[in-house]
Length: 290
Image 1 (spheres, rainbow, N blue to C red):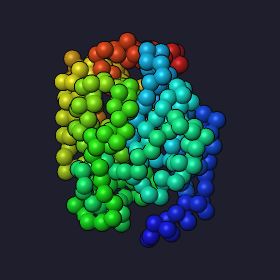
Image 2: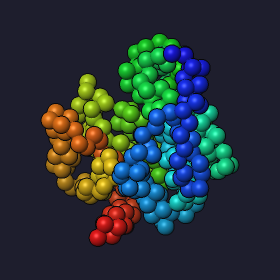
Image 3: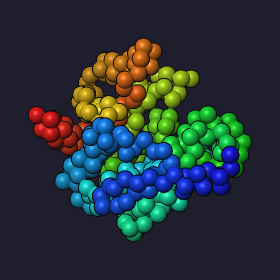
């Protein structure tokens, strides 16, 4: 199927959701409206966290990697008014992303790239779920018309976002790889990191997630809030409890092997300097269900 025919398919199947007063056009048959109807905490946590960050860092900037159609960027902007760099490589979704966030004006910057090894070319026909939730894991090693860029190179082109205080990553299998490229930015800016923990995307490297968590703790990230894929807070894990990293990792593996209820976690990692923000995020979520 060509990119042109995919575009036609998506335009004909328009669906919408409202985030922060913006009418966000979604891809055809998007599950987001159903998720929000069935699971009322779906995508709620990130908005709360974004607002909490603003209490310490007013006017901060944020980066949204895997911006998709802009629903997450709209959520962050709703709670903070932050300037956001939206990184999205899917050529089908890019025009929808720009259209959806047009009302935010100069608060939104766009980088039309997939993040990977600098200069690697991939075949768009090998990208999984193009036009919805693109996954380039299977496209690695192919030759085609789309060129990946490293996170470092992208920040060089958007230097004002190098000091961002919120880094959100949702890339259907490349989150760990991207974080491995971000050590310099994490060491200097110490942003709050909200990322998808889904080891099943990389069965060839089942320990990539655990290595990522170890790397983050070495960089000073001391408080990690675990949410299930429905938005419920599971636990706050300290860097002094590495055994729990393994236990939660094993929990996902058990789900995959014996019957999946929870597909992945969203993890929000706070640097030691922002430990009080982690406590505030935990308290906010607990108070909402008490």
